[in-house]
Image (cartoon, rainbow, N blue to C red; front, side, top):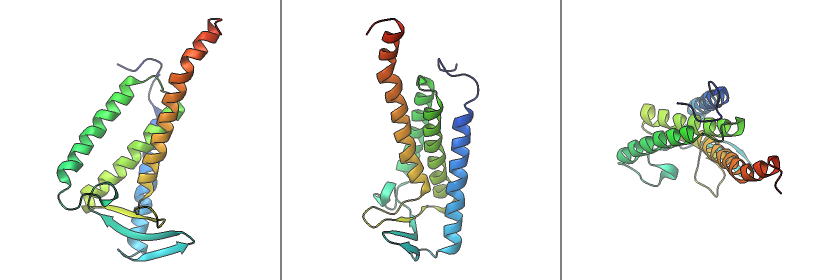
Length: 167
């Protein structure tokens, strides 16, 4: 059953997911080819590109035996996607784009973890742990989803009141 207000195939979500995954995997492949592991490649002001393998969880917090946590995070991610998709009210382009960025980014990091045993990180800004484009997409996607939900939730009552001639 589709969520109310959503029509047909979520093309925006699919395109955002696949584009994010493709860009993430291409960027990591180029880093693996052109920047030796642990070495710095390009450095421009505060931004450095260097290949770091993260076998732990987010930002390398838990090193070593992170597989149980990794599998649990995949399960939580799947449940979250199901809940967000079924919840459904914000089914517009902004929500679908945000959710697509989250899905594509998470899939990119999951592929790394399965194929390489670690996530390839390469963007180093000095004051933050080294990250990658998938991480960036997830953060931006979360912001877009929250914005879409806030716009739908906060303004829905106000718009209804105006349509009904109240306020």
